[in-house]
Amino acid sequence: MQTKELKEKIIKDNRTHTKDTGSPEVQIALISDRINYLTEHFSTHKKDYHSRVGLMKLVGQRKRLLEYLKGQDVKRYKSLIEKLKLRK
Image (cartoon, rainbow, N blue to C red):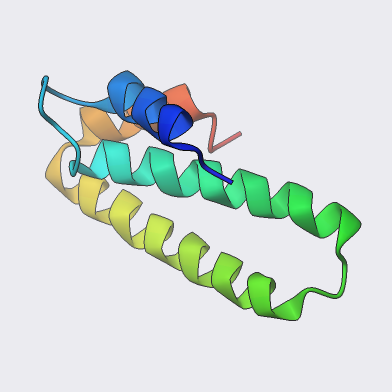
Protein backbone atom coordinates (compact mmCIF):
# COMPACT_ATOMS: atom_id res chain seq x y z
CA MET A 1 0.00 0.00 0.00
CA GLN A 2 1.05 3.59 -0.45
CA THR A 3 2.51 5.09 2.68
CA LYS A 4 2.53 8.83 3.21
CA GLU A 5 6.28 9.01 2.53
CA LEU A 6 6.02 7.03 -0.69
CA LYS A 7 3.12 9.15 -1.89
CA GLU A 8 5.04 12.37 -1.16
CA LYS A 9 8.06 11.02 -3.05
CA ILE A 10 5.93 10.16 -6.09
CA ILE A 11 4.34 13.62 -6.03
CA LYS A 12 7.76 15.28 -5.67
CA ASP A 13 9.19 13.30 -8.61
CA ASN A 14 6.31 14.06 -10.99
CA ARG A 15 5.10 17.55 -10.14
CA THR A 16 5.26 20.44 -12.58
CA HIS A 17 5.80 23.18 -9.96
CA THR A 18 6.49 23.37 -6.22
CA LYS A 19 2.90 23.19 -4.94
CA ASP A 20 1.58 20.83 -7.60
CA THR A 21 -0.41 17.84 -6.34
CA GLY A 22 -3.22 17.47 -8.87
CA SER A 23 -1.72 17.70 -12.34
CA PRO A 24 -2.35 14.77 -14.69
CA GLU A 25 1.28 13.69 -14.36
CA VAL A 26 1.02 13.35 -10.58
CA GLN A 27 -2.35 11.60 -10.75
CA ILE A 28 -1.13 9.11 -13.37
CA ALA A 29 2.02 8.37 -11.36
CA LEU A 30 0.02 7.70 -8.18
CA ILE A 31 -2.46 5.48 -10.00
CA SER A 32 0.38 3.59 -11.71
CA ASP A 33 1.96 2.87 -8.35
CA ARG A 34 -1.32 1.47 -7.02
CA ILE A 35 -1.77 -0.62 -10.19
CA ASN A 36 1.72 -2.07 -9.75
CA TYR A 37 0.98 -2.90 -6.11
CA LEU A 38 -2.30 -4.63 -6.97
CA THR A 39 -0.66 -6.59 -9.78
CA GLU A 40 1.85 -8.01 -7.30
CA HIS A 41 -0.99 -8.66 -4.85
CA PHE A 42 -2.75 -10.88 -7.40
CA SER A 43 0.27 -13.12 -7.82
CA THR A 44 -0.40 -14.49 -4.31
CA HIS A 45 -4.17 -13.86 -4.03
CA LYS A 46 -5.52 -15.25 -7.28
CA LYS A 47 -9.17 -15.35 -6.20
CA ASP A 48 -9.43 -11.79 -4.90
CA TYR A 49 -12.06 -10.74 -7.42
CA HIS A 50 -13.26 -7.67 -5.52
CA SER A 51 -9.84 -6.07 -5.68
CA ARG A 52 -9.58 -7.05 -9.34
CA VAL A 53 -12.66 -4.92 -10.07
CA GLY A 54 -10.93 -2.01 -8.35
CA LEU A 55 -7.83 -2.64 -10.45
CA MET A 56 -9.87 -2.46 -13.65
CA LYS A 57 -11.36 0.85 -12.53
CA LEU A 58 -7.88 2.23 -11.85
CA VAL A 59 -6.65 1.10 -15.27
CA GLY A 60 -9.60 2.84 -16.92
CA GLN A 61 -9.04 6.03 -14.95
CA ARG A 62 -5.34 6.06 -15.87
CA LYS A 63 -6.24 5.51 -19.51
CA ARG A 64 -8.65 8.48 -19.47
CA LEU A 65 -6.05 10.71 -17.82
CA LEU A 66 -3.41 9.66 -20.37
CA GLU A 67 -5.79 10.48 -23.24
CA TYR A 68 -6.51 13.87 -21.66
CA LEU A 69 -2.81 14.65 -21.29
CA LYS A 70 -2.13 13.49 -24.85
CA GLY A 71 -4.78 15.91 -26.13
CA GLN A 72 -3.39 18.79 -24.07
CA ASP A 73 0.36 18.45 -24.60
CA VAL A 74 1.94 15.58 -26.52
CA LYS A 75 5.44 16.46 -25.30
CA ARG A 76 4.45 16.10 -21.63
CA TYR A 77 2.58 12.88 -22.51
CA LYS A 78 5.61 11.29 -24.17
CA SER A 79 7.97 12.29 -21.36
CA LEU A 80 5.61 10.83 -18.74
CA ILE A 81 5.20 7.57 -20.66
CA GLU A 82 8.97 7.27 -20.90
CA LYS A 83 9.49 8.16 -17.23
CA LEU A 84 6.93 5.66 -15.91
CA LYS A 85 7.81 3.00 -18.52
CA LEU A 86 4.17 2.43 -19.47
CA ARG A 87 4.60 1.62 -23.16
CA LYS A 88 6.98 -0.79 -24.82
